[in-house]
Image: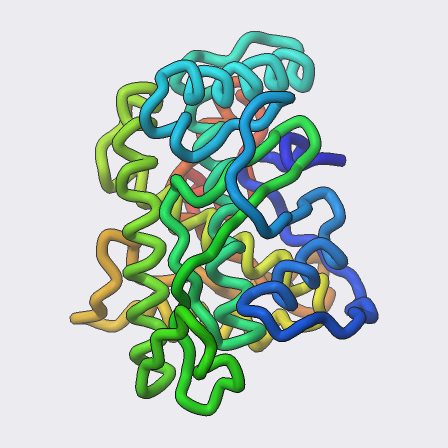
Length: 285
């Protein structure tokens, strides 16, 4: 299984926590190592961006049309293999955006959840290889809390409290995804709100799903609700406010946590009879 096998709107997996060895306390390495332990289909290497041999760098994505085309073509081929029918070009681009945003969002949110650190990662600081589910990341500066043992390291930017750290996470995500959405928009053929809905869904669901594998689901859900509150006046833009979490009873069993998504992934265009769990197009009774 690779990242390319993730459905555009995957259902949340469940699984036990796994033992994780001690790692050096360098910023974000512990969180990224735990990501690989919990979800082996996604591996993060710390280091400079790579190109060639299936790697596409963030700089290529943003500045070389062939880089974006290579990523979208991967999903077009995958869609034909998976569904037995060709995807519409905008649908293939939308799937590609989701499958970029889901793992990249975790580069930010998992260190925030597990280490209380938020890396600064512009798109040019990473690369990805879709066929093998690998990413490279080269964090520079990072935000942390005053009591963090890493607060004295080079590149540490200390913020006073959890609320300030949440603000820096939203800002870091915005800084990363704003230029990425600018290059995807002509391909996806959707407006800014729809594109940010895709990013919001990927950010929320990525952390929710991986945290469940780590035995941290309740903690992650609480953290996400604080990050994207639904109350009036919440300042989350351009990410959409609210996480969409709820509970649903199924066949008389204990209620299961569900989520209503902010946007539609257009899976119905290739599977007309299907709809994703939590699709906003499906009326809720």
